[in-house]
Length: 136
Image (tube, rainbow, N blue to C red; front, side, top):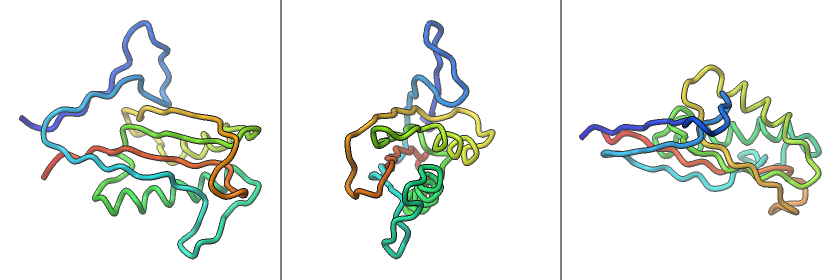
């Protein structure tokens, strides 16, 4: 059986082009789990202090690097889990996501959680990813 990834938006659930409601995977594939990425560059500096848009830019750059380490790309992501610091508006970060995602079909599942704090006081958000890659 070949690897198969199906994105579903069943009738009766809200339809939104920014995310899918259900993803079903079957067949031979690898799962790549990316732990929470935040706005830290390769030198350990927090980027975009006080600016959620700038932090989202750094986070998506980090996510691409992390995914590549697992031989995956943004195209393979089936789920994002996004943590936003309470009191921050997530819209600027979603605008970054929409630009980065572009016109790719089948957007991933998205869970957004507001949290009271993150690992560093300057972090405004953090994103985890789950990607599936058909086995070679």
